[in-house]
Length: 384
View 1 (cartoon, rainbow, N blue to C red):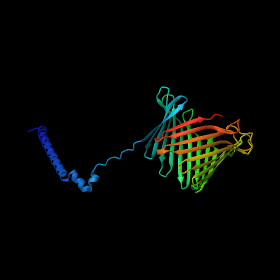
View 2: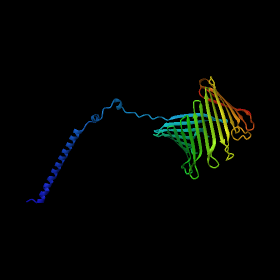
View 3: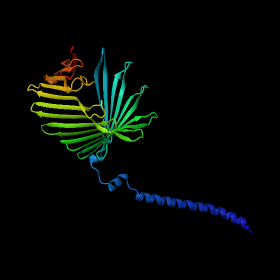
């Protein structure tokens, strides 16, 4: 009789290969089923695109080219500068490019150095942003050489302009670096404009920080102007702190312009507070200038101006010998046009000296312009 353990061991070996064959057969059947389902559900890519999306036109089917970027606008101007017997070139460069919300402009001034190269002596970067509500923000960054062939910022001015109907408000802030390198506001300005162009009022206030850190108005300027078909007139009053720290009138400027056929007259009067006496309300006449301009039929323009003042020639000192304003300067300017844009302008000036009270010729300026726009200017002093 066969041992039960031996029989079980022999039959177990036969069942293992049979199970493996059955498992392999099941895997083959499952793989065949999956392949059949994939074949039935597969759709060509082109056919799927045609059935799911509408057909595009020939123009839409072409690849869209990207819009070319606007190249920066560059300009360069060169001016000859004469210093005694030495003549050198002053170069002014400008680069402007558009941004997503405004523009950036970089201005540079180049002058010759001792080594012969034209180094940048000044650079100013202007960034302009236009906000959705119409507000315009500007930032001016002024840079100077730091001695190591690098441009270092020395001043930043931030400006914000907002318009609402006929009113315009401008806020300006000046920042400078401190000893610790931090930028600190040192000056603030506010300019408010209101009214139509025919009757405009402008108020400008300047703020500076006090010792305690508070901002105080140190300069206020108010301008009221009116204009009509015959001319324009304006009055500007500037207020500064007096000896008691209160704002009081320091300077008053009146200006009036009248226009007629072929003739224009302009009168400007400037009066200033007398600082010799802190409590004296009197103002002396800085200048009263009357200018008449006449244009003839041949295109020649003649301008004559006469200036009266309580000051001596140059405005350095008061004229204490006279109790009324005296004529201190007379100017005659004759501008004659030529052919092809050329022309000549001659300016003759008479002045009153500090010692001699009579008007005498002081100097003459002759300026000539050719057809290409080149300007030649000659200064001729007069012997006194």
